Each structure stands twice: as structure tokens, then as C-alpha cells.
Image (cartoon, rainbow, N blue to C red; front, side, top):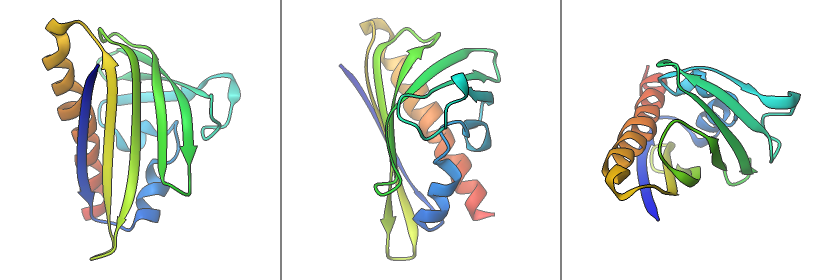
Length: 145
């Protein structure tokens, strides 16, 4: 099992950051590289079991299913159903925690998946360094401005 973990400090209170990212269909608003997104079958974007179908700027299409969601814990867990990446059994959790010294937010995003050994290093970099860190950098820039 391959594991990826990325964390960041976002310069805004947790409730403000959570409002920005809690929408499972809101990736285009804060995740660079996501062109568009829709929730299939007209379900609510915070309903466990809903599926988001989104396209990246490069044309790649992904489908992900919401597995757990908590406004209390400021977290969501999801799996990838379809992706052009050579991975399987992908499960990720995005979680926020308050930093009370300065009213900041600690954000962490972790994932586990299986993949061919020859693809592991590239996928860890693409997911952790690209998707996760790129999203955190976008959020930091949004709230800093």
C-alpha cells in the first residue's frame, strides 16, 4: 500500500476555510487544474455516497465517491472510482484542525492506494506534491490576499 501525506497552514480561521472547501463539487473553486465538476444523479454534494465527475484542465476525467463527511470534524473521505492514473483502491481524507495561536487552520490531506511499483514514485509526487500541495498553495494564496 502506497501512502501520501501533505499538510499546510492556511492563514484563515477553520470555519472560513471549511466553508470554502466543504462542497464536494467545489473543486474548480480552489483546486488548480480542475476545469469543471458535477455531482451525478442530482444528489447533494455533502451526501455520503454521492459521486463527483470532474475534468482536469488537461482533459483527463475522474470520478470520485464521497465515503464520509463531517462538518463537526471538518473532514471528508473519498475514493477514486475512475481515473487515468495507474492506481487502485485509492482512499483519501482531507481534514482541517484549528490553530488557536493566530486563528489559523492546519490542513492535512492523506491518501492510500495500490499501484505498480514502477509507478509509485511518480504517483506520490503527482498526488502529494502536485494535487495536494497545489491545492493548499491555492488556498493559502486565496486567504492571504
